[in-house]
Image (cartoon, rainbow, N blue to C red; front, side, top):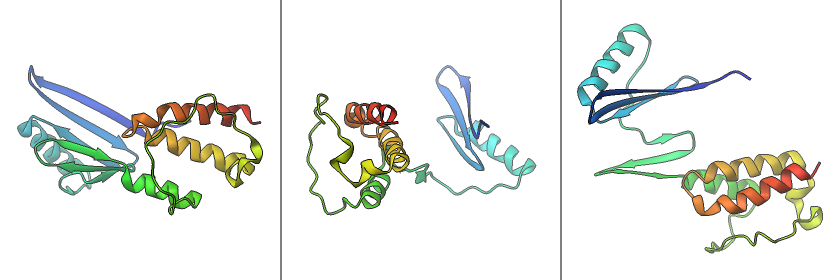
Length: 149
C-alpha cells in the first residue's frame, strides 16, 4: 500500500517548534515559531504552486476552532455517520455499550452487509479521535466485524 501522508517536526529552539503535515495534496503548517512558519511558507510558495487558505477550519473530518487555544470536534463527521445509518432522528444519550453484549447478525439491516458494517466500524474508530468515550464500543464492534466472516 502506498503512503499518502507524512508529518515533519522541527524543534527550532528549546521552546519553539514547527509541524508540517501532508495528506495527499493538502498541507497543514502549525507551531509556535511564527518566523520559521513564515520562512517555510515562503519557501513552499517559491518552489510549488500553493496558496495559503488561512487558519485551519476543517481537515480530514475534524473541525478546528481557534481562539486562546485550539478546540477540535468531529460533529459534522458524526452527523454524516448518523445520516448514513438512518439514525438522525434518534435521541442522544450518554451511555457506554455493555461490553458483554452479544451481537447477532439478525439484529438489523447494518449487519446484513458485512462490507458496509466494517466501513461504519472504521468510521466509528476514527470518531474516537475526539470522542475517546466511544473507544470501548468501537473495539467491541471491530471484534464483531472481524469475527463475522
